[in-house]
Image (cartoon, rainbow, N blue to C red):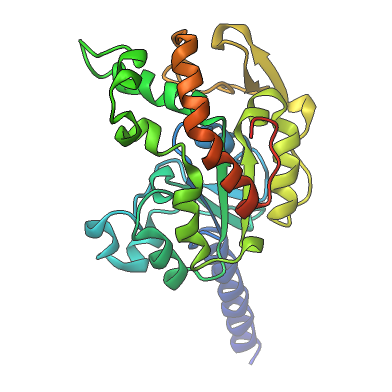
Length: 276
């Protein structure tokens, strides 16, 4: 009898331990997604958030909701792309900036993860366009100057320019998600005062405030971009590239083009960032 009770006790402990291990070593569907915007600071936001002890952050862009091939593989495949959570982690997050401009992503996410929280970063669209241009230029041996692109009569159809009219794309998301499931991050302030934007994000995600001003320093070798006070705390070498100086005429053309877009964005997103 004692032997049987001992065996039962052992099996009970083993079962409980297995349950704990399975919970700690599981992969969860994300409760939050950084859906964009490209070249607005999505990588920095994810890197900074990943230091929070409650967050399990995906290291790769999954491209589940904007890829027909990946989406066909189903939610179980998507789950396997998520990080394995540790005992202290309660929230899984992934980042794929191209979701924001993809016409299929809003409905797909709404049907698959109706309660997910969406993080969206906006920055001055002129700065965003120049950053996009710098990345494109780095992939080509010969590439027109930024000012030359803007001199074309149809420059507004150039992708780096189109993306900056954020309200056009945001309307698609409002068809499927209420405003209280979205949080808008000021990409310009994320560079100047990252701890402020991260405090807003942590509150939006219902997390304790664990990321503070003391966790950052500004790297002069990265054109003053913020870095974390930890090993490999700065963004990669392809981040923080130097931007070309653009002509005043080019800047005025873009300011005029984006003025209506920014006013529209301010109204529908209910934000009042300094650059709008």
